[in-house]
Length: 497
Image 1 (cartoon, one colour):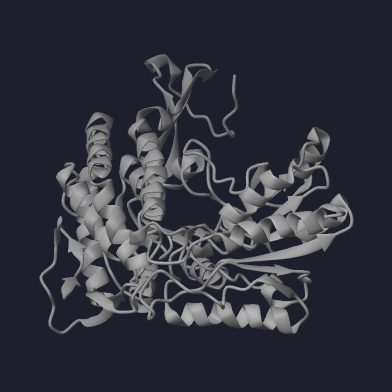
Image 2 (cartoon, one colour):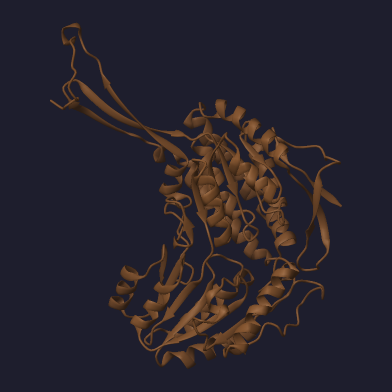
């Protein structure tokens, strides 16, 4: 059985017979396909020390050198995309084409980082006072920690690592222990691209490794993606230690369907956004708010499409793969059961599924719950599975109030033909990413990814301009070159003249 260790000093570490290990499961079969060593605090310390030593040199590398490494990594990632997608599908279960798509979206950020020279430009003002100039520069933080989730084993690390590396930092990446292979393979590609040994370190582990990374004195920042309770805990633990933090949490993304919307277009979008990747996306649509008389037509159109989806092994060309673990599958089922017991109607019931795959896989089919109420646990909790809750609203304002009352604020979408209604929604909805006739409004790389309220802890979002600023510190330099006749005491507070 393949055993993954850690990536330190530009190479995989030798197997440690004393290390704790965890089986890596194939969710489509329920069986183990490998093992991963779990780093303890001492292992994390060695990794951070290695990264800190590498950073001392990497921070002085020219922009031309960094850019060459980024371009080389970009080409290697593209060359090995199919291979890495296979690793993702084996450990995560998502459909193979979806795994390739997440790498493609990650490549967008790599390509943005290839232009780091323009993103790191400072400012300069001449003669702010007589003979005095002021300039600003952006310098790297040092060693930065990245903690990524199971649902996007390649894309989420690619949101952070290329930007951090391009800015001159060294990165310690802690991927989900459920899906370690993609991160380890990408570390090899970074090494082949010419990144100095130690500038990227991968530590595999669980809670002990996460806490050791957050607590380490030589780690300057933490980037995290995961559930809201964990994001809140990561933010609190890191912030109290004076670290810069961007902790992206959970979501309950709403899609509002107004009465004038194209029902077929809205239904296509809702099904695609709710059930892609088996709903295991932080930008998945989990609630559709049907306004007025469009409700029955919309639900019927969604149900028709949901029933046509094929559930099975992601390597066989199906539409939905399995959920990540048996425990998670059972939790999703319990929330559906609670919704039905509370009065929701299971128009399509994913508990009744006949998958194209091993019977021991962690299967759950597309589920449509109609007439869901906000008090139900199926509405209030982040299900993170292929479940679309439909809530009925009488007016557009009532729908907007429902969206804004949610403690989450990751993404929200509206489907309408009315430009003024769309503009009003865009202006007033309380979400960090908004779609108008677009169900999953994930920003392209030059913009930044992140939500509001309980979907983001910290001030900076991922990638884009905010990502560059997160991984750098600004330094302002005020300079004056006086001559001998300018000598003399000046005890007053400096003033421009």
